[in-house]
Image 1 (cartoon, rainbow, N blue to C red):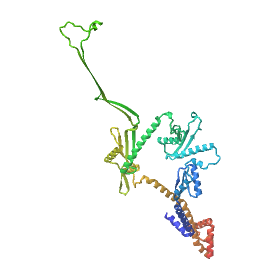
Image 2 (cartoon, rainbow, N blue to C red; image 1 turned 90 degrees about the vertical axis):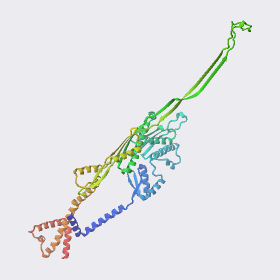
Image 3 (cartoon, rainbow, N blue to C red; image 1 turned 90 degrees about the horizontal axis):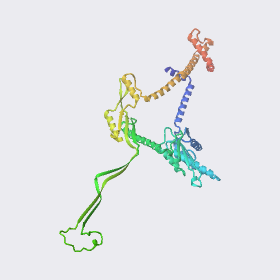
Image 4 (cartoon, rainbow, N blue to C red; image 1 turned 30 degrees about the horizontal axis):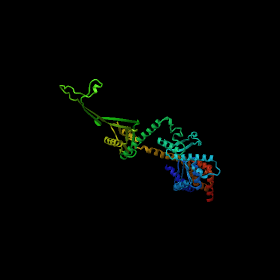
Length: 529
């Protein structure tokens, strides 16, 4: 490498013009880099535009002479012109959000037929609905198709309106049942005589997001239950993640929660009687008393009904009869409790929580000042403390059969493997973190390519130039003496010397490859003489 630098130095010393040229190239390169770095910083003006909106926005930017860059579906402009350009384009109705909206009526020509007006209204309504649906963050683009029948004279001749919505979802995104229901009701409430059951939502992969009414509510209920279960699990996970990260640090905790939900719909009516709680509802008492006299007796007829005549006195007189009767009726009401219970759907039956916690790392140096990181697991006291925190956060219930599992494990697997290797004595030298390996490979590749260019391209060129320069210097050194002594061109060197023969061969090669330069040298010598 030192010889290479010396060759370059000697070459530049003998060629001032080349040195000036190299300096000019370096200065120009630095100037280009500075100008490039001082260029305007671009920011995204609009992202995820449709082809129609992208073309319209670019045309307006060209008219306004605003520099722009296009990257896929994104358009960028200088940072200092982002907000100004957005306001100007918004004033001109751009971007439209795909499709045509009610701005189609801004330029209505005279003489338009009623049929054309109806078609334009249908197109405008479809476009406006598509723009609104596209505002949902999971949807990249949408199209709406409306089937609006003509109004009939009689009600029984009126046909139902129908609608179809096709959506293109963003990568990795899905619609929830609530979002699908929102789209259905949005389209139905924006169109006359359109019921939600007559709206279909489909994505670009052919998946049907709405169900027919005759399929029943079972599938819809199942989807809602799954969504509810996932929502509970995500809520628990986020709460645990945010709580534990404040204790052990960011990206040091992984939480997973499984919720078992009771999806049964239960209605129960109960009647309870209390035999000890008797209450008198009604009470009735009857009391009768009578006294009887001498009654007429004998054979029915006239004689028996005649007035009594004096009879011979009897030996004893019979007293009149008496009777007494008493009735009592009491009705009791037994205490009764009637309750109608409707148990809520979605009650939590069981919770299972798993938590992974990263440990700590200790840095130590060996005898050669090589640093090694050693993983230290969490202590039992720390694990117990984390477990109690998790129980309190999720509302742990032992009767419900809830399970909490907290484990300490190394998150940096590279450190763990290096630790084992160093502990076993299988590796020597400094430890290189895994995240630095791609960076080292990148710069090592750049250095390797640079060395290849220097060795196989630059070095041969410099060698050739140096060899030619040495030959010309040899000519300059020996030619004047030979001319002064009147020697012939072949007597410039001693024939018996091998070094001189090599010099002659080199001179011949130089003359053959660079005849013009040799001629210029000879002319200069002749002029000097």
